[in-house]
Image 1 (cartoon, one colour):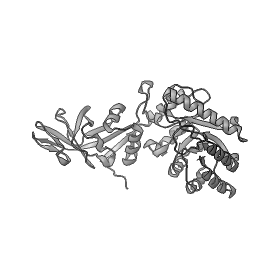
Image 2 (cartoon, rainbow, N blue to C red):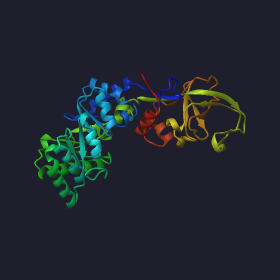
Image 3 (cartoon, rainbow, N blue to C red):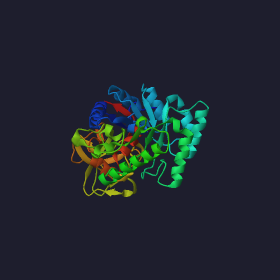
Image 4 (tube, rainbow, N blue to C red):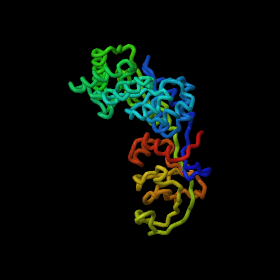
Amino acid sequence: MSVDPIPSSWCEIHLDRVSKNLELTLGLLPKGAAFCAVMKADAYGHGISRIVPLLSEQKVTCVGITSNAEARSVRDSGFSGTLIRLRAATPQEIEAALPDRVEEQVGSLWAAKQLRKLLESGRGCSGVHLALNAGGMSRDGLDISTTVGQQNCREILDEIGQNIVGISTHFPTNEPAGLKHSSDLFKQEVEWVCDNSDLNRSELLVHAGSTLTLLSGERVETDMYRCGAILYGILNSELGFRPTMELKANVVHVGVYPKGATVGYDRDSRLDSDRRLACISIGYAAGYSRIAKGRGNVLICDKLAPVLGKISMNSIVADVTEIPNVQIGDIATAFRTDTEQAKGQFGTILPDLFSDWGIRNPRIYR
């Protein structure tokens, strides 16, 4: 799709806030801990090509991605450090990512055998991270709590043990009791792997911590924290973190409608008095979800205006009766900084919203 020179809706990205959030994040790391900046979903909708230079400015040397497109974008942005895929991948993905020097994650014997074939052909990846479930997400990590799982692990080590540079997991919860249990279990499983192989713990990168882990204040067994959300100010405003994305659109029509008039599809909302309404050029196609019906607001002329009726594909209607100076062309802000309001309005977490908004809408950088 070509870029609209006059977009109906857009995201404003504040690069200075990203830099500040990164600085604050690095300051929270425990002494000796490494940092991996997670660039999933095109840097949570912010645009990898504009975020990677900010990482380089603060000497971040490890980036986490999931897709090959993300890996290519990171390399195209000039990043020469360590690039780790944070999920399992198909053999075709692994082979196609070889030019970008991606360290891959392996959590099954089948995947290890496929990777071994690549290695034997001289086309192996830069390094392998053994993914363990460790009582966690049951997603793509190897479960070694059973005899069968332990046997699979031994066979994986036989296949690609000499290429393993790290061991990873993903904690399923960051509540204190659950996090401690997960951390202790992961430590025990790492010890088991090292005791049953030629791997040397001191030569491995053992990593598990995420944004929520870092902010939990709990001590965990991890050499590196893999964080994404914190860079975009999604959490902990009391520590100085600020949201880095704003979602905006234009007022395209203003009209007065009489008492009894209905608003939107299916006559979903009926006016109880004469009201002045503004039509705004954003809808569910741009990520302003239909779930916001009856609980949405937009900011116009620095005042909140309630959104009425069902959300249309490309427009919403806001009641601006109490904002008499609103006119066509004014900017309506659907999200600025109030993360709790956004979560309540759209019924989901901010990483979901940012990645959706940033991918669906043109991005303007400030």
